Length: 620
Ligand code: MG
Ligand code: MG
Image 1 (cartoon, rainbow, N blue to C red):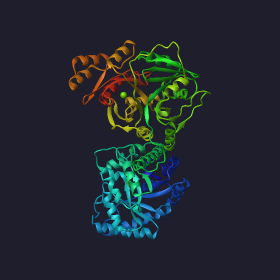
Image 2: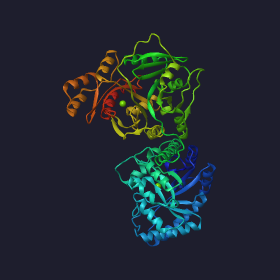
Image 3: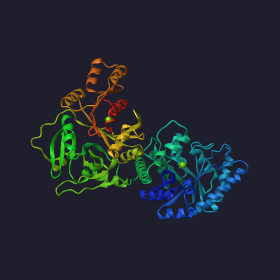
Image 4: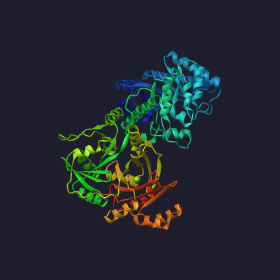
């Protein structure tokens, strides 16, 4: 696969865009005309810069309102094209994108359009150039790639071909199997963009909400599979118009773009049974442990919190100031070492989750896939005899450790010495249900792609949750068996709890950890008795709950007494309660699922309001 990206997809001046595109690993670049016009350098110089970066210029775009123009406008459209041909020759590209005409003056007469392209093809061929015709979803007369292909076929000129753009095809639900009728020799380039399913005007949707393959809801892998099936072997080129990307660092967005292309190519190859270039998405079993970075003053306070939640310290690390706390199948690692990664994390973020340990199948394959996706490995020095647990960089500079499924107990046995006088842990919680991470809104899609590209997970639909001070976007990634669940939350409003978390935490990170229990009321009771501080929920919530769900007064009273929240979907029920935040940074959630699959999104607003009552004296 040849990878390419349009300069319009990322932020910054043209020279910096080219640098970021090359650094991310792309083979080629589409020059978007506005980027060239705004740049203080000639097309020839830009062409040289492209080649100096080791890139090829795959396309110059766009050329608008060409075909079907009436009267004198036809001649002037052809003149304009000649001037663009001059620029292309200076840039060093042979291909220009002609997008379907949107002018109210454009004629829909098919023969005229064919004649115009025949003439343009002659002129392009005279200069060894090619023109590609793209059907814009909002084109005046041509807005469907099947139509554009019929025109190209009728023109039947070697210098005139088709350009496909997945957004234009898939936003209009043009059937993917229609690609099977296209001659790959006549398909000059394919542009890829994903997008969330939104009910809006095509133009506005396209200009503001396109995103990278894997970040949206369109079937891009199936689209690419259809291209592979006809034998298309030209560039796959990202053309992403997105307001968030234009406000983000170019290098991050370029890297996301590269990662998304690699992922979608891999997915398409798997769908069509072709040879693949990297191992499959990682099969995750569960979160085996969560590691906290704590200072010596923070640690005793956190230990008190954990003890009141029923956890007990059961092991001490063989060489470092690291303790293993456990309850049920939940393992927490408290790292107070005064050197190493956790220490650095604590200096930057304060008390925080510095790593998540994931049990997964075939770790060497996962690391190979991570490397193919340009996900950074992390290596830390270990003492002789200690295990080297492989890890990659994750959200907010934290780590994800990988433990081979089935060997979890070996890790604990080898790394930790049991504490002889450890009292038995409580039995209030049994496993980690989900881990909630908070990030800036501009980073949200980046991390969504990270998880989706690396792990065998599905994305839940994106939700908007009302915080008293703004909107928070929330979306989960889940393994097929739901034993691994991460929720991502991003807000651009400065005062939402999510944003305050990021400011206070000095960046993105884990905001809460949800632990599952079999009996929420028993868990709530024993934790309260041990003195765990539980987030208070207002009485009005329970009045509303009674009205909405028709629950018995007895159940309502029981929930109110424990500050337990409730949700129901079909006949499936969800019970949840929260702790107060530790050191104003992160908190625990306890959940009981009775067949219920979501996260109590309807209650998030109540929780956020309850937490924001503390905002004057507490950052979260
Ligand atoms: Mg396009
Ligand atoms: Mg939650």
